[in-house]
Image 1 (cartoon, one colour):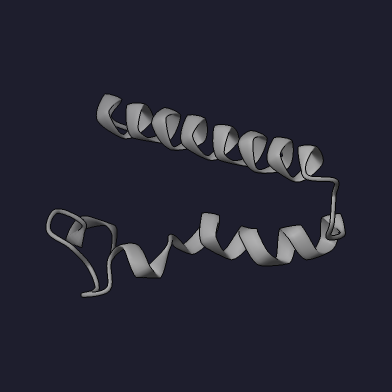
Image 2 (cartoon, one colour):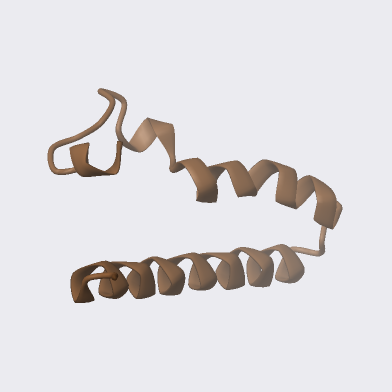
Amino acid sequence: MYERRDLKEAATAATMISWSVYGLTYRWNMEGRKESPADLAQRTVPLIADGVPFLHPLGNHAGMERYK
């Protein structure tokens, strides 16, 4: 069974991802949709799924070992 903490983390992650997608597509729309939806998805889904590598250039930062 899932622990309450795990469910809270899942809810937080879902909120972060959904607002990221909303903001990204809102901006894409306001800037005139200069790339196709497929190109936008190909460029951004890896960032959402894998994280942003340049934000943690030294690899797995403190406290993230549990997610390996």
